[in-house]
Image (cartoon, rainbow over all chains, first blue to last red):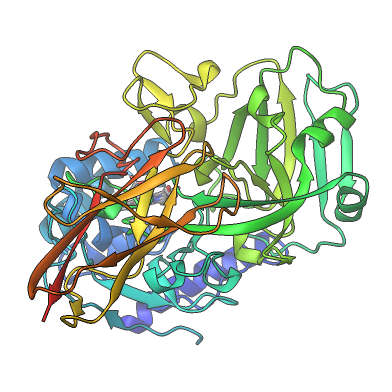
Length: 102
Length: 391
Protein backbone atom coordinates (compact mmCIF):
# COMPACT_ATOMS: atom_id res chain seq x y z
CA UNK A 1 0.00 0.00 0.00
CA UNK A 2 2.76 2.40 0.95
CA UNK A 3 4.30 1.83 -2.47
CA UNK A 4 1.08 2.72 -4.23
CA UNK A 5 0.79 5.96 -2.32
CA UNK A 6 4.37 6.93 -2.92
CA UNK A 7 3.69 6.41 -6.64
CA UNK A 8 0.85 8.91 -6.50
CA UNK A 9 3.22 11.47 -5.02
CA UNK A 10 5.84 10.71 -7.61
CA UNK A 11 3.43 11.17 -10.49
CA UNK A 12 2.60 14.63 -9.26
CA UNK A 13 6.23 15.60 -9.00
CA UNK A 14 6.86 14.43 -12.56
CA UNK A 15 3.76 16.25 -13.78
CA UNK A 16 4.98 19.48 -12.28
CA UNK A 17 8.48 19.08 -13.55
CA UNK A 18 7.08 18.88 -17.09
CA UNK A 19 5.31 22.22 -16.72
CA UNK A 20 7.97 24.49 -15.27
CA UNK A 21 11.72 24.62 -15.25
CA UNK A 22 13.20 23.85 -11.86
CA UNK A 23 10.77 22.96 -9.19
CA UNK A 24 11.96 22.10 -5.74
CA UNK A 25 10.00 19.12 -4.58
CA UNK A 26 12.18 16.95 -2.41
CA UNK A 27 11.26 13.36 -1.76
CA UNK A 28 7.90 13.33 -0.06
CA UNK A 29 7.71 10.78 2.66
CA UNK A 30 5.02 8.22 1.89
CA UNK A 31 2.10 8.91 4.12
CA UNK A 32 -1.13 7.04 4.22
CA UNK A 33 -4.55 7.57 5.70
CA UNK A 34 -6.63 5.26 7.87
CA UNK A 35 -7.91 2.13 6.18
CA UNK A 36 -11.56 2.12 5.10
CA UNK A 37 -13.90 2.58 2.16
CA UNK A 38 -13.20 5.82 0.32
CA UNK A 39 -9.57 6.01 1.33
CA UNK A 40 -8.03 5.67 -2.12
CA UNK A 41 -10.38 8.24 -3.62
CA UNK A 42 -9.66 10.65 -0.75
CA UNK A 43 -5.92 10.23 -1.13
CA UNK A 44 -6.15 10.58 -4.90
CA UNK A 45 -8.03 13.88 -4.74
CA UNK A 46 -6.58 15.42 -1.61
CA UNK A 47 -2.93 14.89 -2.48
CA UNK A 48 -3.03 16.97 -5.65
CA UNK A 49 -2.23 20.39 -4.19
CA UNK A 50 -0.74 19.58 -0.81
CA UNK A 51 0.57 16.64 1.16
CA UNK A 52 -1.89 14.75 3.33
CA UNK A 53 -0.81 16.07 6.73
CA UNK A 54 -3.58 18.69 6.70
CA UNK A 55 -6.11 15.89 7.16
CA UNK A 56 -4.89 14.32 10.44
CA UNK A 57 -3.61 17.65 11.78
CA UNK A 58 -7.03 19.27 11.37
CA UNK A 59 -8.95 16.24 12.67
CA UNK A 60 -9.26 17.62 16.22
CA UNK A 61 -11.02 20.70 14.82
CA UNK A 62 -13.36 18.75 12.57
CA UNK A 63 -16.78 17.15 12.57
CA UNK A 64 -18.98 16.21 9.61
CA UNK A 65 -20.07 19.80 8.99
CA UNK A 66 -16.47 20.97 9.22
CA UNK A 67 -15.29 18.44 6.65
CA UNK A 68 -18.20 19.27 4.39
CA UNK A 69 -17.23 22.94 4.53
CA UNK A 70 -13.59 22.11 3.93
CA UNK A 71 -14.29 19.92 0.87
CA UNK A 72 -16.56 22.64 -0.50
CA UNK A 73 -13.82 25.23 0.11
CA UNK A 74 -11.26 23.06 -1.72
CA UNK A 75 -13.64 22.89 -4.69
CA UNK A 76 -15.11 26.41 -4.77
CA UNK A 77 -12.14 28.48 -3.62
CA UNK A 78 -9.20 26.40 -4.73
CA UNK A 79 -10.57 24.59 -7.81
CA UNK A 80 -10.24 21.00 -6.57
CA UNK A 81 -11.46 18.65 -9.32
CA UNK A 82 -13.94 16.64 -7.25
CA UNK A 83 -17.43 15.70 -8.47
CA UNK A 84 -20.46 15.88 -6.18
CA UNK A 85 -20.59 12.10 -6.04
CA UNK A 86 -16.94 11.91 -5.06
CA UNK A 87 -17.45 14.63 -2.45
CA UNK A 88 -20.04 12.47 -0.74
CA UNK A 89 -17.72 9.44 -0.63
CA UNK A 90 -14.80 11.57 0.61
CA UNK A 91 -16.99 13.22 3.24
CA UNK A 92 -18.17 9.85 4.57
CA UNK A 93 -14.60 8.65 4.71
CA UNK A 94 -13.18 11.77 6.42
CA UNK A 95 -16.04 11.93 8.90
CA UNK A 96 -15.63 8.27 9.80
CA UNK A 97 -11.89 8.52 10.41
CA UNK A 98 -10.92 12.15 11.00
CA UNK A 99 -13.71 13.86 12.92
CA UNK A 100 -12.49 14.98 16.32
CA UNK A 101 -9.60 12.55 16.25
CA UNK A 102 -5.85 12.77 16.16
CA UNK B 1 16.27 10.76 1.94
CA UNK B 2 17.20 13.75 4.06
CA UNK B 3 14.26 13.39 6.25
CA UNK B 4 13.88 11.89 9.66
CA UNK B 5 10.90 11.60 11.87
CA UNK B 6 10.93 11.49 15.60
CA UNK B 7 8.53 12.19 18.35
CA UNK B 8 9.42 14.87 20.81
CA UNK B 9 7.53 15.42 24.02
CA UNK B 10 5.18 12.65 22.95
CA UNK B 11 2.73 13.74 25.60
CA UNK B 12 -0.24 11.42 25.24
CA UNK B 13 -3.27 13.50 24.45
CA UNK B 14 -1.24 16.67 24.34
CA UNK B 15 -2.18 17.25 20.72
CA UNK B 16 -5.87 16.95 21.49
CA UNK B 17 -5.95 18.70 24.79
CA UNK B 18 -7.62 22.05 24.62
CA UNK B 19 -5.59 24.62 26.43
CA UNK B 20 -6.90 26.18 29.56
CA UNK B 21 -6.53 29.93 28.98
CA UNK B 22 -2.92 30.85 29.45
CA UNK B 23 -1.61 27.35 30.03
CA UNK B 24 1.24 26.33 27.77
CA UNK B 25 0.45 23.29 25.66
CA UNK B 26 2.94 20.67 24.58
CA UNK B 27 1.53 19.26 21.37
CA UNK B 28 3.07 16.25 19.71
CA UNK B 29 5.88 17.48 17.51
CA UNK B 30 7.16 15.77 14.40
CA UNK B 31 10.56 16.95 13.24
CA UNK B 32 11.33 17.02 9.54
CA UNK B 33 14.27 18.18 7.52
CA UNK B 34 13.93 20.55 4.61
CA UNK B 35 16.93 21.00 2.31
CA UNK B 36 19.28 23.56 3.88
CA UNK B 37 17.48 23.61 7.22
CA UNK B 38 18.11 21.89 10.51
CA UNK B 39 15.27 19.70 11.80
CA UNK B 40 12.14 21.79 12.28
CA UNK B 41 8.64 20.95 13.47
CA UNK B 42 6.88 19.68 10.37
CA UNK B 43 3.27 20.68 9.74
CA UNK B 44 3.20 19.96 6.02
CA UNK B 45 5.79 18.71 3.63
CA UNK B 46 4.21 20.07 0.45
CA UNK B 47 3.92 23.00 0.42
CA UNK B 48 6.52 23.26 3.16
CA UNK B 49 5.20 24.48 6.48
CA UNK B 50 7.88 24.08 9.15
CA UNK B 51 8.03 25.63 12.60
CA UNK B 52 11.05 26.67 14.67
CA UNK B 53 11.51 24.57 17.84
CA UNK B 54 11.50 26.50 21.13
CA UNK B 55 15.21 25.97 21.79
CA UNK B 56 16.02 27.73 18.53
CA UNK B 57 14.06 30.81 19.61
CA UNK B 58 16.59 31.42 22.40
CA UNK B 59 19.29 33.31 20.40
CA UNK B 60 18.68 37.04 19.97
CA UNK B 61 18.70 36.54 16.20
CA UNK B 62 17.07 33.39 14.89
CA UNK B 63 19.61 31.57 12.71
CA UNK B 64 18.70 31.21 9.04
CA UNK B 65 18.86 27.43 9.12
CA UNK B 66 16.17 27.20 11.79
CA UNK B 67 13.96 30.10 10.70
CA UNK B 68 10.36 28.96 10.14
CA UNK B 69 8.99 28.29 6.66
CA UNK B 70 5.45 29.01 5.53
CA UNK B 71 3.93 28.53 2.05
CA UNK B 72 0.39 28.27 0.72
CA UNK B 73 1.14 27.02 -2.79
CA UNK B 74 3.29 24.06 -3.75
CA UNK B 75 4.98 25.15 -6.99
CA UNK B 76 8.08 26.92 -5.70
CA UNK B 77 10.77 27.58 -8.30
CA UNK B 78 14.37 27.85 -7.27
CA UNK B 79 15.27 31.22 -8.71
CA UNK B 80 18.51 32.01 -10.49
CA UNK B 81 19.58 35.39 -9.03
CA UNK B 82 21.43 36.24 -12.25
CA UNK B 83 18.26 36.16 -14.35
CA UNK B 84 15.71 37.23 -11.74
CA UNK B 85 13.82 40.46 -12.47
CA UNK B 86 11.58 42.62 -10.35
CA UNK B 87 8.82 44.31 -12.35
CA UNK B 88 7.31 47.51 -10.98
CA UNK B 89 4.23 48.83 -12.74
CA UNK B 90 0.50 49.45 -12.46
CA UNK B 91 -1.74 52.40 -13.33
CA UNK B 92 -0.35 54.57 -10.55
CA UNK B 93 3.29 54.72 -11.63
CA UNK B 94 4.79 57.11 -14.14
CA UNK B 95 7.65 54.84 -15.23
CA UNK B 96 7.52 51.06 -15.16
CA UNK B 97 10.74 49.42 -13.94
CA UNK B 98 12.32 46.06 -14.58
CA UNK B 99 15.18 45.65 -12.13
CA UNK B 100 17.90 43.03 -11.92
CA UNK B 101 19.17 41.99 -8.51
CA UNK B 102 22.37 43.87 -9.26
CA UNK B 103 20.44 47.08 -9.99
CA UNK B 104 18.33 46.67 -6.89
CA UNK B 105 21.43 46.19 -4.76
CA UNK B 106 23.47 49.03 -6.23
CA UNK B 107 21.06 51.72 -7.39
CA UNK B 108 19.37 52.30 -4.05
CA UNK B 109 20.54 53.13 -0.55
CA UNK B 110 21.21 50.00 1.52
CA UNK B 111 19.51 49.70 4.89
CA UNK B 112 19.46 47.17 7.70
CA UNK B 113 16.72 46.54 10.17
CA UNK B 114 16.11 43.99 12.92
CA UNK B 115 12.53 42.79 12.91
CA UNK B 116 10.30 40.00 14.09
CA UNK B 117 8.60 38.01 11.34
CA UNK B 118 5.57 36.28 12.83
CA UNK B 119 3.02 34.30 10.86
CA UNK B 120 -0.58 35.49 11.34
CA UNK B 121 -1.46 31.95 12.36
CA UNK B 122 1.30 31.54 14.96
CA UNK B 123 -0.15 29.62 17.96
CA UNK B 124 -3.30 28.57 16.09
CA UNK B 125 -2.74 25.02 17.34
CA UNK B 126 -2.98 26.31 20.92
CA UNK B 127 -6.22 28.18 20.27
CA UNK B 128 -9.42 27.30 22.15
CA UNK B 129 -11.82 26.71 20.49
CA UNK B 130 -9.69 25.01 17.86
CA UNK B 131 -9.49 26.68 14.46
CA UNK B 132 -8.86 25.00 11.09
CA UNK B 133 -5.59 25.66 9.28
CA UNK B 134 -1.94 24.88 9.91
CA UNK B 135 -1.79 23.91 13.59
CA UNK B 136 1.19 26.07 14.52
CA UNK B 137 2.60 26.11 18.03
CA UNK B 138 4.75 29.03 19.23
CA UNK B 139 7.44 28.85 16.59
CA UNK B 140 5.93 30.33 13.42
CA UNK B 141 8.10 33.31 14.18
CA UNK B 142 11.66 34.53 14.38
CA UNK B 143 13.77 37.65 14.67
CA UNK B 144 16.34 38.51 12.01
CA UNK B 145 18.52 41.32 10.77
CA UNK B 146 17.18 42.11 7.31
CA UNK B 147 19.24 44.02 4.74
CA UNK B 148 17.93 45.51 1.58
CA UNK B 149 16.57 48.72 0.15
CA UNK B 150 13.54 50.82 0.97
CA UNK B 151 10.46 49.93 -1.03
CA UNK B 152 9.71 53.65 -1.03
CA UNK B 153 12.90 54.47 -2.94
CA UNK B 154 11.94 51.93 -5.62
CA UNK B 155 8.38 53.29 -5.81
CA UNK B 156 9.70 56.83 -6.13
CA UNK B 157 12.03 55.76 -8.93
CA UNK B 158 8.90 54.44 -10.66
CA UNK B 159 7.27 57.84 -10.04
CA UNK B 160 4.41 56.66 -7.88
CA UNK B 161 1.36 58.86 -8.52
CA UNK B 162 -0.63 60.72 -5.85
CA UNK B 163 -3.72 58.61 -6.63
CA UNK B 164 -1.98 55.37 -5.51
CA UNK B 165 -4.26 53.55 -3.07
CA UNK B 166 -2.71 50.09 -2.74
CA UNK B 167 0.54 48.44 -3.73
CA UNK B 168 0.13 44.82 -4.84
CA UNK B 169 2.86 42.19 -4.47
CA UNK B 170 3.33 38.85 -6.19
CA UNK B 171 6.02 36.24 -5.71
CA UNK B 172 7.30 33.41 -7.89
CA UNK B 173 5.41 30.61 -6.13
CA UNK B 174 2.29 29.44 -7.99
CA UNK B 175 -0.56 26.98 -7.45
CA UNK B 176 -0.57 23.38 -8.63
CA UNK B 177 -3.92 23.78 -10.40
CA UNK B 178 -5.05 26.92 -12.22
CA UNK B 179 -8.26 27.08 -10.16
CA UNK B 180 -6.32 27.97 -6.99
CA UNK B 181 -5.83 31.73 -6.60
CA UNK B 182 -2.21 32.81 -6.82
CA UNK B 183 -0.81 34.14 -3.55
CA UNK B 184 -0.93 37.90 -4.06
CA UNK B 185 -1.12 40.51 -1.28
CA UNK B 186 -1.53 44.25 -1.10
CA UNK B 187 -0.52 47.00 1.30
CA UNK B 188 -2.01 50.46 1.74
CA UNK B 189 0.15 52.89 -0.27
CA UNK B 190 0.86 54.67 3.01
CA UNK B 191 2.44 51.54 4.52
CA UNK B 192 4.32 50.75 1.31
CA UNK B 193 5.84 54.25 1.50
CA UNK B 194 6.85 53.88 5.15
CA UNK B 195 10.62 54.16 5.44
CA UNK B 196 10.76 50.84 7.29
CA UNK B 197 9.11 48.77 4.57
CA UNK B 198 11.98 47.08 2.74
CA UNK B 199 12.82 44.82 -0.14
CA UNK B 200 15.41 42.58 1.53
CA UNK B 201 17.94 40.32 -0.11
CA UNK B 202 19.91 39.32 2.98
CA UNK B 203 19.05 37.89 6.35
CA UNK B 204 21.45 37.85 9.29
CA UNK B 205 24.28 38.87 6.97
CA UNK B 206 23.75 36.09 4.42
CA UNK B 207 21.75 35.95 1.19
CA UNK B 208 18.14 34.98 1.93
CA UNK B 209 17.77 31.21 2.16
CA UNK B 210 15.66 29.75 -0.63
CA UNK B 211 12.83 28.79 1.74
CA UNK B 212 12.75 32.28 3.24
CA UNK B 213 12.21 34.04 -0.07
CA UNK B 214 15.40 34.21 -2.17
CA UNK B 215 16.49 36.27 -3.91
CA UNK B 216 14.37 39.12 -2.50
CA UNK B 217 11.37 39.44 -0.23
CA UNK B 218 9.28 42.14 1.32
CA UNK B 219 9.85 43.19 4.94
CA UNK B 220 6.85 44.85 6.57
CA UNK B 221 8.06 45.25 10.14
CA UNK B 222 5.34 45.33 12.76
CA UNK B 223 2.86 43.57 10.46
CA UNK B 224 2.20 39.83 10.38
CA UNK B 225 4.14 37.61 7.98
CA UNK B 226 1.38 37.28 5.38
CA UNK B 227 2.47 40.62 3.88
CA UNK B 228 6.16 39.74 3.73
CA UNK B 229 5.96 38.41 0.16
CA UNK B 230 8.74 35.93 -0.66
CA UNK B 231 10.49 35.43 -4.02
CA UNK B 232 9.15 38.85 -4.97
CA UNK B 233 8.68 39.27 -8.75
CA UNK B 234 5.96 41.87 -9.30
CA UNK B 235 4.92 45.11 -7.68
CA UNK B 236 1.88 46.95 -9.00
CA UNK B 237 0.71 50.33 -7.79
CA UNK B 238 -3.02 50.85 -8.24
CA UNK B 239 -5.62 53.53 -7.52
CA UNK B 240 -8.13 50.89 -6.41
CA UNK B 241 -8.43 48.11 -3.84
CA UNK B 242 -7.01 44.76 -4.92
CA UNK B 243 -9.66 42.05 -4.80
CA UNK B 244 -7.76 38.73 -4.82
CA UNK B 245 -8.76 35.80 -2.62
CA UNK B 246 -5.85 36.17 -0.20
CA UNK B 247 -6.95 39.74 0.60
CA UNK B 248 -10.75 39.57 0.35
CA UNK B 249 -11.39 36.14 1.87
CA UNK B 250 -8.31 35.00 3.77
CA UNK B 251 -6.30 36.60 6.58
CA UNK B 252 -9.29 38.48 7.95
CA UNK B 253 -10.54 39.36 11.42
CA UNK B 254 -13.93 40.50 12.69
CA UNK B 255 -14.08 44.27 12.11
CA UNK B 256 -13.34 46.25 15.24
CA UNK B 257 -12.45 43.23 17.38
CA UNK B 258 -8.74 44.02 17.70
CA UNK B 259 -6.59 47.13 18.02
CA UNK B 260 -4.09 47.99 15.32
CA UNK B 261 -3.79 49.73 11.97
CA UNK B 262 -7.02 49.70 9.96
CA UNK B 263 -6.56 48.80 6.33
CA UNK B 264 -9.47 51.00 5.26
CA UNK B 265 -9.62 50.16 1.54
CA UNK B 266 -9.94 46.44 2.39
CA UNK B 267 -12.36 46.73 5.29
CA UNK B 268 -16.07 45.88 5.22
CA UNK B 269 -18.63 45.99 8.04
CA UNK B 270 -18.06 42.31 8.95
CA UNK B 271 -14.37 41.67 8.39
CA UNK B 272 -11.07 43.48 8.03
CA UNK B 273 -7.55 42.32 7.13
CA UNK B 274 -5.18 41.31 9.89
CA UNK B 275 -2.42 43.96 9.93
CA UNK B 276 -0.15 44.73 12.89
CA UNK B 277 1.08 42.24 15.46
CA UNK B 278 -0.26 42.61 18.98
CA UNK B 279 1.96 42.96 22.04
CA UNK B 280 3.07 39.47 22.98
CA UNK B 281 5.75 37.42 24.74
CA UNK B 282 7.13 33.93 24.86
CA UNK B 283 8.98 32.14 27.65
CA UNK B 284 11.95 30.41 26.03
CA UNK B 285 13.90 29.25 29.09
CA UNK B 286 11.40 26.77 30.50
CA UNK B 287 8.38 24.72 29.57
CA UNK B 288 5.69 23.54 31.94
CA UNK B 289 6.77 20.50 33.86
CA UNK B 290 10.44 21.52 34.04
CA UNK B 291 12.16 20.77 37.35
CA UNK B 292 14.19 23.31 39.31
CA UNK B 293 16.60 22.43 42.09
CA UNK B 294 15.60 23.91 45.41
CA UNK B 295 17.96 26.69 46.47
CA UNK B 296 19.76 26.79 43.11
CA UNK B 297 19.48 30.04 41.21
CA UNK B 298 17.20 29.90 38.16
CA UNK B 299 16.18 32.62 35.74
CA UNK B 300 13.02 32.78 33.70
CA UNK B 301 13.66 34.38 30.33
CA UNK B 302 12.12 34.87 26.95
CA UNK B 303 11.19 37.38 24.29
CA UNK B 304 8.62 40.16 24.00
CA UNK B 305 7.53 42.01 20.87
CA UNK B 306 4.79 44.21 19.47
CA UNK B 307 3.83 46.22 16.39
CA UNK B 308 7.01 48.28 16.44
CA UNK B 309 5.98 50.77 19.11
CA UNK B 310 8.62 49.03 21.21
CA UNK B 311 8.45 47.01 24.41
CA UNK B 312 8.14 49.17 27.49
CA UNK B 313 8.30 46.44 30.10
CA UNK B 314 7.71 42.79 30.91
CA UNK B 315 6.16 41.73 34.20
CA UNK B 316 6.17 38.36 35.89
CA UNK B 317 3.81 37.08 38.56
CA UNK B 318 4.43 33.98 40.65
CA UNK B 319 1.35 34.35 42.88
CA UNK B 320 -1.55 33.74 40.56
CA UNK B 321 -1.37 37.12 38.81
CA UNK B 322 -1.90 39.19 41.96
CA UNK B 323 1.49 40.86 42.21
CA UNK B 324 3.75 41.58 39.28
CA UNK B 325 7.49 42.23 39.24
CA UNK B 326 9.35 43.90 36.41
CA UNK B 327 11.73 41.64 34.53
CA UNK B 328 15.11 42.95 33.39
CA UNK B 329 15.09 43.77 29.70
CA UNK B 330 17.93 42.75 27.41
CA UNK B 331 19.64 44.82 24.77
CA UNK B 332 17.42 46.99 22.59
CA UNK B 333 17.88 45.66 19.04
CA UNK B 334 15.45 48.19 17.57
CA UNK B 335 11.77 48.76 18.05
CA UNK B 336 10.69 46.14 15.49
CA UNK B 337 12.89 43.42 17.00
CA UNK B 338 11.91 41.33 19.97
CA UNK B 339 13.27 42.24 23.39
CA UNK B 340 14.78 39.68 25.71
CA UNK B 341 13.63 39.59 29.32
CA UNK B 342 15.02 37.88 32.41
CA UNK B 343 13.79 37.44 35.95
CA UNK B 344 15.47 35.43 38.72
CA UNK B 345 13.07 32.96 40.34
CA UNK B 346 12.84 32.29 44.05
CA UNK B 347 13.59 28.58 44.43
CA UNK B 348 13.86 28.53 48.23
CA UNK B 349 10.56 26.65 48.74
CA UNK B 350 9.80 23.29 47.20
CA UNK B 351 6.58 22.63 45.36
CA UNK B 352 4.86 23.93 42.26
CA UNK B 353 5.88 27.34 40.99
CA UNK B 354 3.57 28.94 38.45
CA UNK B 355 4.93 31.95 36.61
CA UNK B 356 2.82 34.23 34.42
CA UNK B 357 4.42 36.69 32.02
CA UNK B 358 2.92 39.75 30.40
CA UNK B 359 4.50 42.35 28.18
CA UNK B 360 3.58 46.01 27.88
CA UNK B 361 4.05 48.05 24.73
CA UNK B 362 4.91 51.71 24.46
CA UNK B 363 1.65 51.98 22.52
CA UNK B 364 -0.14 51.46 25.85
CA UNK B 365 -1.31 47.90 25.18
CA UNK B 366 -0.71 45.01 27.56
CA UNK B 367 -1.22 41.30 26.98
CA UNK B 368 -4.76 40.27 27.93
CA UNK B 369 -5.88 37.36 30.11
CA UNK B 370 -8.51 36.10 27.68
CA UNK B 371 -8.54 35.28 23.98
CA UNK B 372 -10.67 37.23 21.55
CA UNK B 373 -12.18 34.34 19.62
CA UNK B 374 -12.06 34.61 15.83
CA UNK B 375 -12.69 31.97 13.18
CA UNK B 376 -9.16 31.82 11.79
CA UNK B 377 -7.46 31.53 15.18
CA UNK B 378 -5.35 34.68 14.85
CA UNK B 379 -3.85 36.99 17.46
CA UNK B 380 -3.35 34.67 20.42
CA UNK B 381 -1.42 37.04 22.68
CA UNK B 382 -2.85 36.04 26.03
CA UNK B 383 -0.67 35.98 29.14
CA UNK B 384 1.40 32.80 29.13
CA UNK B 385 2.02 30.72 32.24
CA UNK B 386 4.43 27.90 32.98
CA UNK B 387 4.19 25.61 35.98
CA UNK B 388 7.58 24.43 37.24
CA UNK B 389 8.41 21.97 39.98
CA UNK B 390 10.92 23.00 42.64
CA UNK B 391 12.41 19.97 44.38
